[in-house]
Length: 259
Length: 292
Image (cartoon, rainbow over all chains, first blue to last red; front, side, top):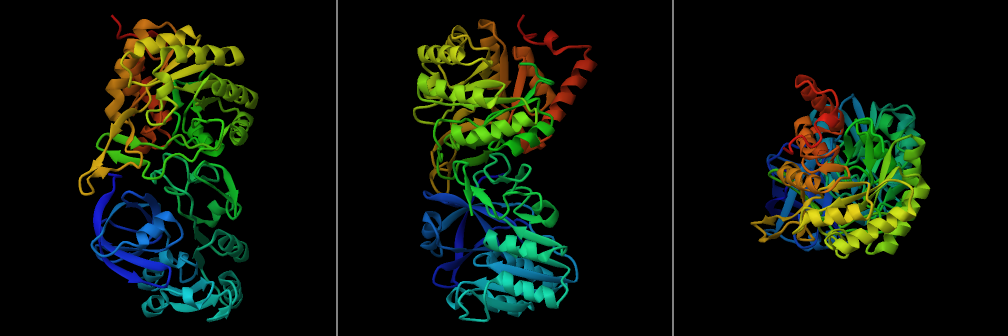
Protein backbone atom coordinates (compact mmCIF):
# COMPACT_ATOMS: atom_id res chain seq x y z
CA UNK A 1 0.00 0.00 0.00
CA UNK A 2 1.14 3.52 -0.79
CA UNK A 3 1.51 4.60 2.79
CA UNK A 4 4.84 5.56 4.40
CA UNK A 5 6.59 2.69 6.19
CA UNK A 6 8.58 3.97 9.13
CA UNK A 7 12.21 2.88 9.13
CA UNK A 8 15.26 3.83 11.16
CA UNK A 9 18.35 5.31 9.60
CA UNK A 10 21.00 2.65 10.27
CA UNK A 11 24.03 4.33 8.73
CA UNK A 12 24.97 7.85 7.67
CA UNK A 13 27.83 8.56 5.26
CA UNK A 14 29.05 12.06 4.64
CA UNK A 15 29.96 12.12 0.94
CA UNK A 16 31.11 15.75 0.88
CA UNK A 17 30.31 19.09 2.52
CA UNK A 18 26.70 19.16 1.29
CA UNK A 19 25.95 15.56 0.40
CA UNK A 20 25.02 12.68 2.68
CA UNK A 21 23.89 9.08 2.20
CA UNK A 22 21.37 7.46 4.54
CA UNK A 23 21.04 3.69 4.68
CA UNK A 24 17.95 1.92 6.00
CA UNK A 25 16.12 -1.38 5.79
CA UNK A 26 13.42 -1.55 3.14
CA UNK A 27 12.87 -4.97 1.67
CA UNK A 28 11.00 -4.31 -1.60
CA UNK A 29 12.51 -5.10 -5.04
CA UNK A 30 14.06 -2.05 -6.68
CA UNK A 31 15.30 -1.28 -10.21
CA UNK A 32 18.09 1.25 -10.69
CA UNK A 33 16.47 4.58 -11.55
CA UNK A 34 13.40 4.12 -9.38
CA UNK A 35 12.65 6.52 -6.54
CA UNK A 36 11.09 6.66 -3.10
CA UNK A 37 8.79 9.20 -1.53
CA UNK A 38 10.61 10.04 1.69
CA UNK A 39 8.56 11.39 4.58
CA UNK A 40 10.42 13.61 7.00
CA UNK A 41 7.75 13.70 9.72
CA UNK A 42 6.61 17.19 10.54
CA UNK A 43 8.55 18.69 7.64
CA UNK A 44 7.75 17.40 4.15
CA UNK A 45 7.60 14.41 1.84
CA UNK A 46 9.90 14.49 -1.17
CA UNK A 47 10.80 12.21 -4.08
CA UNK A 48 14.32 10.84 -3.90
CA UNK A 49 16.13 8.42 -6.17
CA UNK A 50 17.57 5.23 -4.76
CA UNK A 51 21.37 5.35 -4.61
CA UNK A 52 22.09 1.98 -2.99
CA UNK A 53 20.38 -1.33 -3.70
CA UNK A 54 21.96 -3.93 -1.44
CA UNK A 55 20.32 -6.98 0.09
CA UNK A 56 17.38 -5.50 1.98
CA UNK A 57 19.43 -2.39 2.81
CA UNK A 58 18.66 0.65 0.66
CA UNK A 59 20.15 4.08 0.52
CA UNK A 60 19.43 7.57 -0.69
CA UNK A 61 22.06 10.20 -1.39
CA UNK A 62 21.09 13.84 -1.38
CA UNK A 63 22.36 17.40 -1.33
CA UNK A 64 21.00 19.95 1.15
CA UNK A 65 19.23 22.42 -1.09
CA UNK A 66 15.98 23.37 0.61
CA UNK A 67 13.93 23.11 3.78
CA UNK A 68 13.24 19.40 3.42
CA UNK A 69 16.75 18.28 2.52
CA UNK A 70 18.23 20.56 5.20
CA UNK A 71 16.00 18.91 7.79
CA UNK A 72 16.95 15.50 6.46
CA UNK A 73 20.64 16.42 6.50
CA UNK A 74 20.42 17.03 10.24
CA UNK A 75 19.01 13.56 11.00
CA UNK A 76 21.28 10.83 12.33
CA UNK A 77 21.52 7.09 12.97
CA UNK A 78 18.43 5.93 14.88
CA UNK A 79 16.17 8.71 13.59
CA UNK A 80 12.98 7.67 11.85
CA UNK A 81 11.81 8.49 8.35
CA UNK A 82 8.88 7.21 6.31
CA UNK A 83 9.39 5.48 2.98
CA UNK A 84 6.92 4.58 0.24
CA UNK A 85 7.65 3.19 -3.16
CA UNK A 86 9.71 2.36 -5.10
CA UNK A 87 8.05 4.31 -7.88
CA UNK A 88 8.62 4.74 -11.59
CA UNK A 89 10.12 2.39 -14.11
CA UNK A 90 13.89 2.89 -13.87
CA UNK A 91 16.61 2.33 -16.45
CA UNK A 92 16.61 -0.43 -19.02
CA UNK A 93 20.14 -1.77 -18.93
CA UNK A 94 21.16 -3.69 -22.03
CA UNK A 95 23.61 -3.55 -24.96
CA UNK A 96 27.38 -4.09 -25.05
CA UNK A 97 28.76 -0.72 -24.06
CA UNK A 98 27.04 2.03 -22.08
CA UNK A 99 28.12 5.59 -21.41
CA UNK A 100 26.75 6.90 -18.10
CA UNK A 101 26.74 10.67 -17.66
CA UNK A 102 25.98 12.00 -14.18
CA UNK A 103 25.73 15.68 -13.38
CA UNK A 104 25.87 16.81 -9.73
CA UNK A 105 23.65 14.68 -7.49
CA UNK A 106 22.44 12.85 -10.61
CA UNK A 107 25.45 10.60 -10.04
CA UNK A 108 23.64 9.21 -6.97
CA UNK A 109 20.89 7.44 -8.91
CA UNK A 110 23.19 6.45 -11.79
CA UNK A 111 25.55 4.53 -9.50
CA UNK A 112 23.29 1.47 -8.98
CA UNK A 113 22.62 1.45 -12.74
CA UNK A 114 26.38 1.37 -13.41
CA UNK A 115 26.77 -1.46 -10.90
CA UNK A 116 24.00 -3.44 -12.53
CA UNK A 117 25.49 -2.88 -15.99
CA UNK A 118 28.91 -4.12 -14.83
CA UNK A 119 27.27 -7.13 -13.18
CA UNK A 120 25.62 -7.90 -16.52
CA UNK A 121 29.06 -7.73 -18.21
CA UNK A 122 28.19 -4.53 -20.06
CA UNK A 123 31.31 -2.43 -20.75
CA UNK A 124 30.61 0.65 -18.68
CA UNK A 125 32.06 4.14 -18.84
CA UNK A 126 30.95 6.74 -16.31
CA UNK A 127 31.38 10.49 -16.26
CA UNK A 128 31.02 12.30 -12.96
CA UNK A 129 30.33 15.93 -13.78
CA UNK A 130 30.55 18.47 -10.96
CA UNK A 131 31.35 22.16 -10.46
CA UNK A 132 34.66 21.58 -8.68
CA UNK A 133 36.78 18.86 -7.09
CA UNK A 134 35.19 19.35 -3.64
CA UNK A 135 31.83 18.18 -4.99
CA UNK A 136 33.01 14.81 -6.28
CA UNK A 137 31.37 11.77 -4.70
CA UNK A 138 31.03 8.07 -5.60
CA UNK A 139 34.32 8.15 -7.57
CA UNK A 140 35.83 5.22 -5.64
CA UNK A 141 32.56 3.33 -5.75
CA UNK A 142 32.33 3.54 -9.54
CA UNK A 143 36.01 2.71 -10.10
CA UNK A 144 35.85 -0.25 -7.69
CA UNK A 145 32.78 -1.70 -9.38
CA UNK A 146 34.73 -1.81 -12.63
CA UNK A 147 33.47 1.16 -14.63
CA UNK A 148 35.93 3.28 -16.58
CA UNK A 149 35.43 6.49 -14.66
CA UNK A 150 36.09 10.07 -15.74
CA UNK A 151 35.80 13.26 -13.74
CA UNK A 152 34.72 16.54 -15.34
CA UNK A 153 34.82 19.78 -13.36
CA UNK A 154 33.46 23.12 -14.53
CA UNK A 155 36.48 24.92 -13.07
CA UNK A 156 39.07 22.34 -14.09
CA UNK A 157 40.12 21.59 -10.51
CA UNK A 158 40.09 17.83 -11.29
CA UNK A 159 40.04 15.75 -14.45
CA UNK A 160 38.50 17.16 -17.60
CA UNK A 161 38.13 20.93 -17.60
CA UNK A 162 34.56 21.55 -18.73
CA UNK A 163 31.01 20.23 -18.68
CA UNK A 164 30.19 16.53 -18.50
CA UNK A 165 28.28 16.90 -21.77
CA UNK A 166 31.40 18.26 -23.52
CA UNK A 167 33.49 15.33 -22.30
CA UNK A 168 30.70 12.97 -23.38
CA UNK A 169 30.74 14.53 -26.84
CA UNK A 170 34.49 13.84 -27.12
CA UNK A 171 34.07 10.23 -25.95
CA UNK A 172 31.17 9.66 -28.34
CA UNK A 173 33.32 10.97 -31.17
CA UNK A 174 36.14 8.55 -30.33
CA UNK A 175 34.23 5.44 -29.25
CA UNK A 176 31.02 3.67 -30.18
CA UNK A 177 28.48 3.22 -27.35
CA UNK A 178 25.31 1.15 -27.67
CA UNK A 179 23.50 3.62 -25.44
CA UNK A 180 23.86 6.68 -23.23
CA UNK A 181 22.18 6.87 -19.80
CA UNK A 182 22.08 10.12 -17.92
CA UNK A 183 20.85 11.94 -14.84
CA UNK A 184 21.66 15.51 -13.93
CA UNK A 185 20.58 19.09 -14.58
CA UNK A 186 17.99 19.04 -17.36
CA UNK A 187 19.83 21.60 -19.49
CA UNK A 188 22.86 19.27 -19.47
CA UNK A 189 20.73 16.25 -20.35
CA UNK A 190 19.02 18.13 -23.20
CA UNK A 191 22.43 19.13 -24.58
CA UNK A 192 23.57 15.53 -24.33
CA UNK A 193 20.38 14.35 -26.05
CA UNK A 194 21.08 16.66 -28.98
CA UNK A 195 24.69 15.45 -29.13
CA UNK A 196 23.68 11.77 -29.10
CA UNK A 197 21.81 11.86 -32.39
CA UNK A 198 20.81 8.30 -33.25
CA UNK A 199 22.50 6.66 -30.24
CA UNK A 200 19.84 5.14 -27.93
CA UNK A 201 19.38 7.42 -24.95
CA UNK A 202 17.71 7.35 -21.53
CA UNK A 203 17.41 10.33 -19.21
CA UNK A 204 16.00 10.55 -15.70
CA UNK A 205 13.84 13.64 -15.25
CA UNK A 206 12.93 15.46 -12.07
CA UNK A 207 9.63 17.23 -11.42
CA UNK A 208 7.73 18.52 -8.40
CA UNK A 209 5.72 15.59 -7.09
CA UNK A 210 2.82 15.11 -4.72
CA UNK A 211 1.08 11.73 -4.95
CA UNK A 212 3.86 9.69 -6.59
CA UNK A 213 1.34 7.21 -8.01
CA UNK A 214 0.02 8.93 -11.10
CA UNK A 215 -3.14 10.61 -9.87
CA UNK A 216 -2.50 14.26 -9.12
CA UNK A 217 -0.87 15.11 -12.50
CA UNK A 218 1.50 17.54 -10.80
CA UNK A 219 4.45 15.92 -12.60
CA UNK A 220 2.82 15.35 -16.02
CA UNK A 221 4.84 16.23 -19.10
CA UNK A 222 4.50 15.72 -22.86
CA UNK A 223 1.29 13.98 -23.84
CA UNK A 224 0.13 13.40 -20.28
CA UNK A 225 3.15 11.28 -19.29
CA UNK A 226 3.47 10.96 -15.52
CA UNK A 227 7.10 11.32 -14.43
CA UNK A 228 6.20 9.30 -11.31
CA UNK A 229 4.68 6.36 -13.25
CA UNK A 230 5.88 6.31 -16.88
CA UNK A 231 9.16 7.97 -15.81
CA UNK A 232 11.29 9.20 -14.25
CA UNK A 233 13.48 7.58 -16.92
CA UNK A 234 12.42 8.29 -20.50
CA UNK A 235 14.03 7.02 -23.70
CA UNK A 236 14.75 8.94 -26.87
CA UNK A 237 11.40 8.14 -28.48
CA UNK A 238 9.52 9.61 -25.51
CA UNK A 239 11.91 12.54 -25.04
CA UNK A 240 11.61 13.82 -28.60
CA UNK A 241 7.88 14.29 -28.02
CA UNK A 242 8.21 16.02 -24.64
CA UNK A 243 8.22 19.73 -25.36
CA UNK A 244 9.02 20.52 -21.71
CA UNK A 245 12.33 18.58 -21.85
CA UNK A 246 15.07 21.13 -21.23
CA UNK A 247 12.55 23.97 -21.57
CA UNK A 248 10.32 24.32 -18.53
CA UNK A 249 8.90 22.64 -15.44
CA UNK A 250 5.85 23.38 -13.33
CA UNK A 251 5.98 24.77 -9.80
CA UNK A 252 3.68 23.73 -6.93
CA UNK A 253 0.84 25.86 -8.33
CA UNK A 254 1.18 24.30 -11.78
CA UNK A 255 2.63 27.43 -13.40
CA UNK A 256 5.31 26.95 -16.02
CA UNK A 257 8.83 27.91 -14.95
CA UNK A 258 11.53 28.07 -17.63
CA UNK A 259 14.85 26.40 -16.87
CA UNK B 1 -24.85 19.22 -22.09
CA UNK B 2 -24.89 16.11 -24.26
CA UNK B 3 -22.46 13.38 -23.29
CA UNK B 4 -21.34 10.49 -25.50
CA UNK B 5 -21.33 8.19 -22.44
CA UNK B 6 -22.12 8.53 -18.72
CA UNK B 7 -18.51 8.59 -17.43
CA UNK B 8 -16.77 11.89 -16.66
CA UNK B 9 -13.35 12.63 -15.17
CA UNK B 10 -13.76 13.96 -11.61
CA UNK B 11 -12.01 17.15 -10.54
CA UNK B 12 -8.55 16.92 -9.01
CA UNK B 13 -7.25 13.84 -10.80
CA UNK B 14 -5.10 13.95 -13.95
CA UNK B 15 -6.38 17.41 -14.78
CA UNK B 16 -3.61 19.90 -14.21
CA UNK B 17 -2.87 20.33 -17.90
CA UNK B 18 -4.64 19.81 -21.23
CA UNK B 19 -2.43 16.88 -22.27
CA UNK B 20 -3.28 14.86 -19.13
CA UNK B 21 -6.98 15.54 -19.62
CA UNK B 22 -6.70 14.50 -23.27
CA UNK B 23 -5.14 11.24 -22.11
CA UNK B 24 -8.16 10.63 -19.87
CA UNK B 25 -10.53 11.56 -22.69
CA UNK B 26 -8.72 9.00 -24.86
CA UNK B 27 -9.26 6.55 -21.98
CA UNK B 28 -12.98 6.79 -22.59
CA UNK B 29 -14.26 9.72 -20.52
CA UNK B 30 -17.03 11.64 -22.26
CA UNK B 31 -15.98 14.90 -20.61
CA UNK B 32 -13.35 16.11 -18.18
CA UNK B 33 -13.67 18.32 -15.12
CA UNK B 34 -10.63 20.50 -14.55
CA UNK B 35 -8.70 20.86 -11.35
CA UNK B 36 -10.47 23.49 -9.23
CA UNK B 37 -9.24 26.90 -10.31
CA UNK B 38 -9.20 30.10 -8.26
CA UNK B 39 -8.42 33.70 -9.10
CA UNK B 40 -4.76 33.59 -8.14
CA UNK B 41 -1.97 31.00 -8.21
CA UNK B 42 -2.07 28.81 -5.10
CA UNK B 43 0.60 26.37 -3.93
CA UNK B 44 -1.63 24.23 -1.78
CA UNK B 45 -0.40 22.39 1.29
CA UNK B 46 3.09 21.00 1.79
CA UNK B 47 3.56 17.24 1.38
CA UNK B 48 2.47 14.71 2.50
CA UNK B 49 -0.66 15.65 0.61
CA UNK B 50 -1.53 12.06 -0.12
CA UNK B 51 -1.67 8.64 1.54
CA UNK B 52 -3.30 5.40 0.47
CA UNK B 53 -5.50 3.62 3.02
CA UNK B 54 -7.13 0.19 3.11
CA UNK B 55 -10.03 1.05 0.82
CA UNK B 56 -9.18 4.29 -0.87
CA UNK B 57 -7.03 7.38 -0.88
CA UNK B 58 -6.80 10.24 1.57
CA UNK B 59 -5.60 13.59 0.24
CA UNK B 60 -5.27 17.20 1.29
CA UNK B 61 -3.82 19.01 -1.69
CA UNK B 62 -5.15 22.40 -0.58
CA UNK B 63 -6.51 23.51 -3.96
CA UNK B 64 -3.17 24.07 -5.70
CA UNK B 65 -3.71 25.76 -9.06
CA UNK B 66 -1.96 28.18 -11.40
CA UNK B 67 -4.77 30.74 -11.27
CA UNK B 68 -7.53 31.39 -13.80
CA UNK B 69 -5.39 33.58 -16.06
CA UNK B 70 -2.70 30.99 -16.69
CA UNK B 71 -5.20 28.12 -16.88
CA UNK B 72 -6.92 29.63 -19.93
CA UNK B 73 -4.28 28.08 -22.16
CA UNK B 74 -5.23 24.56 -21.02
CA UNK B 75 -8.97 25.07 -21.66
CA UNK B 76 -8.29 26.54 -25.09
CA UNK B 77 -6.10 23.56 -26.02
CA UNK B 78 -8.92 21.18 -25.03
CA UNK B 79 -11.43 23.21 -27.06
CA UNK B 80 -9.19 22.96 -30.12
CA UNK B 81 -9.23 19.19 -29.65
CA UNK B 82 -13.04 19.19 -29.31
CA UNK B 83 -12.88 17.69 -25.82
CA UNK B 84 -15.90 18.59 -23.66
CA UNK B 85 -14.52 20.39 -20.62
CA UNK B 86 -16.22 21.34 -17.38
CA UNK B 87 -14.38 24.13 -15.61
CA UNK B 88 -14.22 23.62 -11.85
CA UNK B 89 -13.91 26.87 -9.92
CA UNK B 90 -13.62 27.84 -6.27
CA UNK B 91 -13.97 31.22 -4.60
CA UNK B 92 -14.63 32.70 -1.19
CA UNK B 93 -17.61 34.81 -2.26
CA UNK B 94 -20.00 35.42 -5.16
CA UNK B 95 -17.76 38.09 -6.74
CA UNK B 96 -14.91 35.65 -7.08
CA UNK B 97 -17.16 32.93 -8.45
CA UNK B 98 -18.61 35.36 -11.02
CA UNK B 99 -15.22 36.54 -12.19
CA UNK B 100 -13.99 32.95 -12.49
CA UNK B 101 -17.10 31.80 -14.35
CA UNK B 102 -16.86 34.67 -16.82
CA UNK B 103 -13.24 33.73 -17.56
CA UNK B 104 -14.11 30.04 -17.95
CA UNK B 105 -16.92 30.98 -20.37
CA UNK B 106 -14.61 33.20 -22.39
CA UNK B 107 -12.07 30.36 -22.68
CA UNK B 108 -14.81 28.14 -24.10
CA UNK B 109 -15.62 25.76 -21.22
CA UNK B 110 -18.74 23.67 -21.95
CA UNK B 111 -20.04 23.84 -18.39
CA UNK B 112 -19.06 25.03 -14.91
CA UNK B 113 -18.72 23.06 -11.71
CA UNK B 114 -18.84 25.19 -8.58
CA UNK B 115 -16.65 23.64 -5.92
CA UNK B 116 -18.67 24.09 -2.74
CA UNK B 117 -17.38 20.96 -1.14
CA UNK B 118 -13.58 20.73 -0.87
CA UNK B 119 -13.30 19.27 2.66
CA UNK B 120 -9.96 20.76 3.65
CA UNK B 121 -9.55 24.34 2.38
CA UNK B 122 -10.02 27.22 4.78
CA UNK B 123 -12.48 29.83 3.52
CA UNK B 124 -13.37 27.83 0.44
CA UNK B 125 -15.21 24.72 -0.66
CA UNK B 126 -17.21 23.14 2.13
CA UNK B 127 -17.05 26.32 4.23
CA UNK B 128 -19.08 28.00 1.46
CA UNK B 129 -21.12 24.90 0.66
CA UNK B 130 -22.51 24.47 4.16
CA UNK B 131 -24.30 27.83 4.08
CA UNK B 132 -27.56 27.34 2.19
CA UNK B 133 -28.14 31.07 1.58
CA UNK B 134 -24.64 31.50 0.18
CA UNK B 135 -25.04 28.43 -2.04
CA UNK B 136 -28.24 29.85 -3.53
CA UNK B 137 -26.79 33.35 -3.92
CA UNK B 138 -23.59 32.20 -5.61
CA UNK B 139 -25.37 29.73 -7.86
CA UNK B 140 -27.95 32.22 -9.06
CA UNK B 141 -25.39 34.97 -9.64
CA UNK B 142 -23.08 32.66 -11.59
CA UNK B 143 -26.09 31.41 -13.56
CA UNK B 144 -27.04 34.97 -14.52
CA UNK B 145 -23.54 35.89 -15.60
CA UNK B 146 -22.82 32.79 -17.70
CA UNK B 147 -24.46 31.15 -20.68
CA UNK B 148 -23.33 27.56 -20.05
CA UNK B 149 -24.73 24.89 -17.72
CA UNK B 150 -23.78 25.33 -14.06
CA UNK B 151 -23.24 22.30 -11.81
CA UNK B 152 -22.87 22.58 -8.04
CA UNK B 153 -20.62 20.04 -6.35
CA UNK B 154 -21.68 19.24 -2.81
CA UNK B 155 -20.14 17.54 0.18
CA UNK B 156 -21.50 14.67 2.22
CA UNK B 157 -20.10 16.36 5.35
CA UNK B 158 -23.31 18.28 5.96
CA UNK B 159 -26.01 17.91 8.57
CA UNK B 160 -28.66 18.47 5.92
CA UNK B 161 -27.36 17.83 2.45
CA UNK B 162 -30.85 17.93 0.95
CA UNK B 163 -31.34 21.49 2.17
CA UNK B 164 -28.14 22.59 0.42
CA UNK B 165 -29.08 20.73 -2.76
CA UNK B 166 -32.45 22.49 -2.74
CA UNK B 167 -30.67 25.83 -2.38
CA UNK B 168 -28.60 25.05 -5.45
CA UNK B 169 -31.79 24.14 -7.30
CA UNK B 170 -33.42 27.39 -6.20
CA UNK B 171 -30.35 29.20 -7.52
CA UNK B 172 -31.15 27.61 -10.90
CA UNK B 173 -28.28 25.12 -10.96
CA UNK B 174 -28.48 22.80 -13.97
CA UNK B 175 -27.23 19.80 -12.01
CA UNK B 176 -25.95 18.67 -8.64
CA UNK B 177 -22.66 16.81 -8.39
CA UNK B 178 -22.40 14.60 -5.29
CA UNK B 179 -20.23 13.84 -3.45
CA UNK B 180 -16.76 15.27 -2.86
CA UNK B 181 -14.19 13.33 -0.83
CA UNK B 182 -15.17 12.70 2.78
CA UNK B 183 -13.38 14.33 5.72
CA UNK B 184 -11.01 11.82 7.25
CA UNK B 185 -7.67 11.34 8.99
CA UNK B 186 -4.84 8.81 9.06
CA UNK B 187 -2.53 8.60 12.05
CA UNK B 188 0.83 6.88 11.81
CA UNK B 189 1.35 4.83 14.97
CA UNK B 190 5.16 4.88 14.95
CA UNK B 191 5.30 8.65 14.66
CA UNK B 192 2.14 9.21 16.72
CA UNK B 193 1.00 11.87 14.27
CA UNK B 194 -1.33 12.40 11.32
CA UNK B 195 0.40 11.55 8.03
CA UNK B 196 -1.02 14.47 6.03
CA UNK B 197 0.69 17.82 6.55
CA UNK B 198 -2.80 19.34 6.83
CA UNK B 199 -3.73 16.55 9.26
CA UNK B 200 -7.30 16.35 7.88
CA UNK B 201 -7.98 15.31 4.32
CA UNK B 202 -10.66 13.98 2.03
CA UNK B 203 -11.18 10.25 1.62
CA UNK B 204 -12.01 8.91 -1.84
CA UNK B 205 -12.33 5.48 -3.41
CA UNK B 206 -14.38 2.34 -2.71
CA UNK B 207 -14.88 3.13 0.98
CA UNK B 208 -17.04 6.17 0.24
CA UNK B 209 -19.27 4.66 -2.44
CA UNK B 210 -22.11 3.73 -0.04
CA UNK B 211 -21.98 7.27 1.37
CA UNK B 212 -22.21 8.76 -2.12
CA UNK B 213 -25.03 6.45 -3.16
CA UNK B 214 -27.04 7.39 -0.08
CA UNK B 215 -26.52 11.10 -0.73
CA UNK B 216 -27.55 10.84 -4.37
CA UNK B 217 -30.62 8.83 -3.33
CA UNK B 218 -31.70 11.47 -0.79
CA UNK B 219 -31.05 14.37 -3.15
CA UNK B 220 -32.91 12.66 -6.00
CA UNK B 221 -35.96 12.30 -3.77
CA UNK B 222 -36.01 16.04 -3.14
CA UNK B 223 -34.81 17.88 -6.24
CA UNK B 224 -35.85 17.73 -9.89
CA UNK B 225 -32.59 18.70 -11.59
CA UNK B 226 -30.16 16.01 -12.82
CA UNK B 227 -27.53 14.57 -10.48
CA UNK B 228 -24.02 13.45 -11.30
CA UNK B 229 -22.85 10.74 -8.89
CA UNK B 230 -19.26 10.69 -7.63
CA UNK B 231 -17.44 8.62 -5.05
CA UNK B 232 -15.85 5.21 -5.33
CA UNK B 233 -16.97 4.25 -8.81
CA UNK B 234 -14.66 1.42 -9.85
CA UNK B 235 -16.91 -0.75 -12.02
CA UNK B 236 -19.97 -0.54 -14.23
CA UNK B 237 -22.02 -2.01 -11.40
CA UNK B 238 -20.87 0.78 -9.08
CA UNK B 239 -21.94 3.32 -11.69
CA UNK B 240 -25.33 1.63 -12.08
CA UNK B 241 -25.87 1.80 -8.34
CA UNK B 242 -25.48 5.57 -8.57
CA UNK B 243 -27.82 5.62 -11.56
CA UNK B 244 -30.50 3.65 -9.73
CA UNK B 245 -30.10 6.04 -6.79
CA UNK B 246 -30.91 8.86 -9.18
CA UNK B 247 -27.75 9.91 -11.02
CA UNK B 248 -27.77 10.61 -14.76
CA UNK B 249 -24.00 10.28 -15.06
CA UNK B 250 -20.99 9.48 -12.87
CA UNK B 251 -17.58 10.97 -12.30
CA UNK B 252 -14.48 8.86 -11.75
CA UNK B 253 -11.12 9.91 -10.30
CA UNK B 254 -9.48 7.65 -7.74
CA UNK B 255 -10.51 4.60 -9.80
CA UNK B 256 -7.69 5.48 -12.20
CA UNK B 257 -5.25 4.24 -9.57
CA UNK B 258 -6.94 0.85 -9.33
CA UNK B 259 -7.97 0.20 -12.93
CA UNK B 260 -5.84 2.48 -15.12
CA UNK B 261 -6.56 5.54 -17.22
CA UNK B 262 -8.93 3.53 -19.43
CA UNK B 263 -11.24 2.85 -16.45
CA UNK B 264 -13.80 5.07 -18.21
CA UNK B 265 -14.05 2.75 -21.17
CA UNK B 266 -14.09 -0.30 -18.88
CA UNK B 267 -16.92 1.11 -16.77
CA UNK B 268 -18.94 2.12 -19.84
CA UNK B 269 -18.61 -1.39 -21.33
CA UNK B 270 -19.53 -3.02 -18.01
CA UNK B 271 -22.62 -0.83 -17.78
CA UNK B 272 -23.60 -1.81 -21.31
CA UNK B 273 -23.09 -5.51 -20.59
CA UNK B 274 -25.20 -5.39 -17.48
CA UNK B 275 -27.95 -3.49 -19.29
CA UNK B 276 -27.89 -5.93 -22.20
CA UNK B 277 -28.03 -8.92 -19.84
CA UNK B 278 -30.99 -7.38 -18.06
CA UNK B 279 -32.80 -6.16 -21.17
CA UNK B 280 -32.42 -2.42 -20.73
CA UNK B 281 -31.93 -0.34 -23.86
CA UNK B 282 -31.39 3.12 -22.41
CA UNK B 283 -29.87 4.41 -19.24
CA UNK B 284 -32.88 6.63 -18.62
CA UNK B 285 -34.96 3.54 -17.85
CA UNK B 286 -32.69 2.98 -14.84
CA UNK B 287 -32.24 6.51 -13.50
CA UNK B 288 -33.80 6.55 -10.05
CA UNK B 289 -35.02 2.96 -10.43
CA UNK B 290 -34.32 2.28 -6.76
CA UNK B 291 -36.97 4.78 -5.70
CA UNK B 292 -40.06 2.69 -5.15
